[in-house]
Image (cartoon, rainbow, N blue to C red; front, top):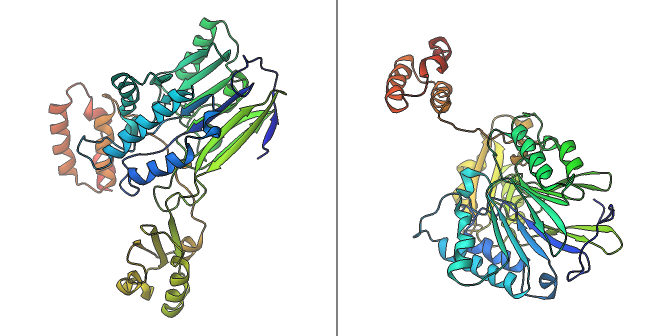
Length: 407
């Protein structure tokens, strides 16, 4: 990816750098069960230290999925999260950095990012903060720029979302916004295209004058065209096996000469989730191979042993674990040798969200029961219960047929 790109002229009020310098981070997933919040927060402080480089930022955008799941007040991750939010707000206040927090996937964030404005208000911090949970366009008058925000799973899907964006732009009398901060998926990111949930990159590249940043996909990638592009910063830290590509965040600097400098800032201390492919190795070779590979890993890293289902290592895991007892170990026996040696890909780019509504909840439940092999009698009983719980739902017209769920 080129670090400097030509850009159409953009007149900005001189502000700090004389142009516009901002950071975008997303998919932090605080509260994840395999990567403690305290550790992720430590890496966040390292990514945004209180120094001259951070102070030169005009804005920090968090493009969704601050949280991984809903948390209770007594959760052990809460203290670290509260500490980070408070410190980040104070950092932004001290250095006059705008902080914008976009709502991410409902299954993850669950509107818990409302804590940012709550802490900002109750703590009398008064940072320049905006929490965004709906499609919106913000005009930053001190920079003379328009910023488009689109959270994940907008009502009605990608088509109505695009129309809402065009309506907002028409109402503001503008033909383009300067940058966009989004959470979701563009069509170029996934192999199978469902136009109802994926955004059309060509439409948005016409509507956004400069750069689009989008969260949700955990793999860092970019789609560049005509001097600007769509940038997927990826997840900030690692959360599981198969996510072994570099993690971090992105920074964008509009230079006084009209060019953009775009950088990916790696989180070099991201949690390690290493997969060791032992396919075709003898037990002796496997022990030597694994010992060499794990000797340099930090404590509490995760190690997955991959091999044929009858590989002798799986009956000797206790001996293997004694090599490094402070690591998390997982065994992954596979029957298909070709699958075992195939490159492990990050799966988020292929993820297709399902909107659960009043109208489809029963049919989704029944389809899941059918896929799990539920009998016809159990399915019939489930329909009776569903009719009592969801009287508005036409269960009989949407349920799988008996032939389907008995197949």
